[in-house]
Figure 1 (tube, helix red, strand yellow):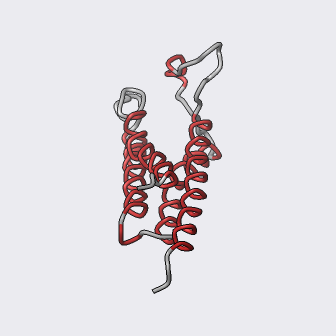
Figure 2 (cartoon, rainbow, N blue to C red):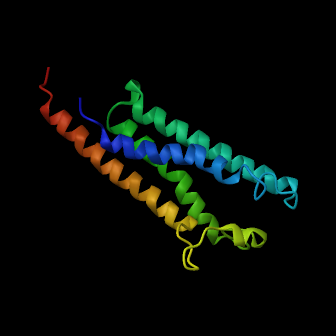
Figure 3 (cartoon, rainbow, N blue to C red):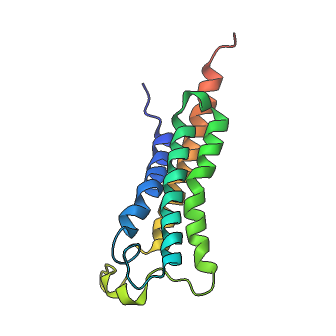
Amino acid sequence: MRLPLGRVLLSVSALAAAVGAFVADWNETHIFNPRWPPHAKFHNAQTMLLGSALGLATLYFLWSRRWRGPRGLEVGTLLASIYWLTQAGALLFPGTALTDPEFADRVPRIGGVLPFNQLAIELVFLTLVAVGFFLERRALRREAASTPLS
């Protein structure tokens, strides 16, 4: 049985969206930050839940037998990319930043440089989505070409 590498790559991105925000935000820098007003915490919680919902929906469309094929791949790919695209787009809004000034010293640095800033993370996962889509689309085309007509 062939390992569906394309779906696996898409799934890695989906799982990162589903759990990544909880890993990054379920702490005193975000949801438990006493300086954050309740409405900011509401939007943080909304973002965490949205990432989980998109990730789980992606996995459903990629792995469900009902959606096996090009349409499930297209929907799954779209869902897998939404979280990362909107996160990158959020930086275009006035007053947004990747970190709060009070926690800037806690961001890991190597030689004074951020090794994994948020834009790099988004680029990595969007690349996984793109590569996963093209690999899985190619595999589905090969599968369809090798299947005899009934």
